[in-house]
Length: 458
Ligand code: NDP
Image (cartoon, rainbow, N blue to C red; front, side, top):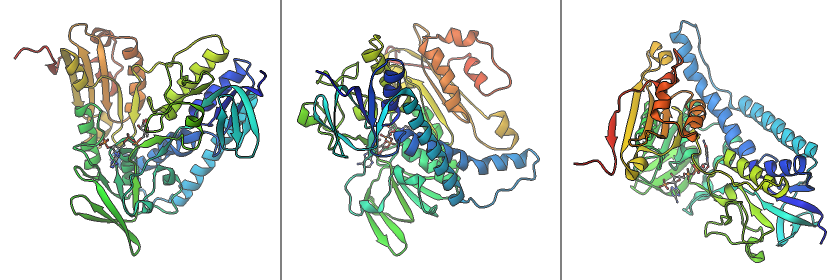
C-alpha cells in the first residue's frame, strides 16, 4: 500500500517538531505535521520560554537592590506590564516563525489544522482533508487541569498568565508543584501580593525534603504567604475581586486566582480509543520503550504519554523515534537520571535520588553545605546556598545532587554529567575547585554530614 507520507505527526510542540525534523532531514522521510494552535507547543508558546523570561523580569528589583549595596545609585520604579507583555509576545512570534521555518527547511509539510485518527494509517484534518501515513506520531502534549469546584471558571491557568490584561495587586495560587511555585515567585518579584494554597504538608512534594525546605524558606522570606493543609472549595465573584473560600473556612480576597493543579494528557477527541490505541484513565497514551502504542503504526512521545513531563525528555523521545524508524538506529529514550530545575526564587536544581530515596535503598552518606554566597553576603543579604550530595556508602557513587541558590539550574546541568557518568565522591574530591565561585563547594565538601539508611545499626 502506498501512503501520502512516511510519517504524520500530530502536534507541533517539542517532541513532535524534533521527530518530524530528524525524520525528514536525516532520515529522508516524507513527513507532515498538523498543529491546531501555535507552532512550538507548550514549552515555547505557553510554558518554559515565556515563563523564564518572566522569571528574568521578576528578578530585576533584587538585582537593583544588590546594585545599591555595591555602590550604584540605582533605583527601580514601577513595572510596565503592558510593555513587557508586548515584547514577550513579539519574542514568541519570532520563535514560532523560527520553528515553522526549521520544519519547512527540513522539508516537512505543515497543516495548520486539528487532526484526529480514523484508522491506524488515516488522519482526518479539521479542514476536511483526509491523509494516509505509514507511521503516525501522537505528540499532542498536555492541558492544564482544574478541579471541579463552584466558581472554577473565575480562575485562570498558566496558559493565561502570559496574556493578562493587567497585573493583579493580589493573587491566590492553588497548587504546590513546579508551576504554582514558579508563578508564586514570579508574581511576588513583580510586586504582586501572593498567597499560595497547597492541600498537603509542604509544597514541592517528591523533591529532596531538605532542599525543598530550603526553597520554601527563601520563598517565605521574600514575602510569599504559603498556606498548607487546606484546599480551595469555592470561588465567588464579589464586586471587583474574587473571594477564595478555603476548606478551613477562611476567605481570601484577590484579583486573580491561578490554578496550577497539574496537567493532563491532551488526547480527548483524537479518536485513539476508537481505533484501538490503549490509554490510561488519565488519558495518557500507553507506549513501550520505543514509544510505540499497541498499534504498530501509531507512536506517542512527550507529555501525552505522561512519562517524565519535561521538554528535553520529549525532544529525546521524538529524536529516538525518528532514529528508530528512519535512520536504522533502534533507540530507546533514556529516562534514567534526568536532571531538572525549578525556577523558583531561590532556584532549585536536582538530579538523581533524594536523601529519602537513597536511605530507603541502603546505607547512604549525605554531604550538605549551607553558606552565604559572596555576592549577596557583601550586600548584607541573608540568602544561603544549599548544596547536597547523596552518596552510596559502599560504592561511594554519587546517587543524587541537589542545589538551591542563584544559578542552580545552570550548575545542575554540569553536575548531572558527572552523576550520569557514575562519578564517585572521590571523583568529585579529585576535581580542583574553581575559585572564587559558589559551585566550587560541590567539590570541597570533605566531611560526611550524616550517614543514614536501611542498614544502620541502632
Ligand atoms: P505538578 O504535578 O508538579 O503539581 C500539581 C500540584 O497540584 C501538586 O501540588 C498537587 O498536589 C496539586 N493538585 C493536584 N490536584 C489537585 C486538586 N484536585 N486540588 C488541589 N490541588 C491539587 O503539576 P504542575 O501543574 O505544577 O506542572 C505540570 C508539569 O509540568 C510538571 O509535572 C512538570 O513536569 C512540568 N513543568 C516543569 C517545569 C520545569 O521543569 N521547571 C516548570 C513547569 C512545569 P499534591 O502534591 O498533593 O499531589
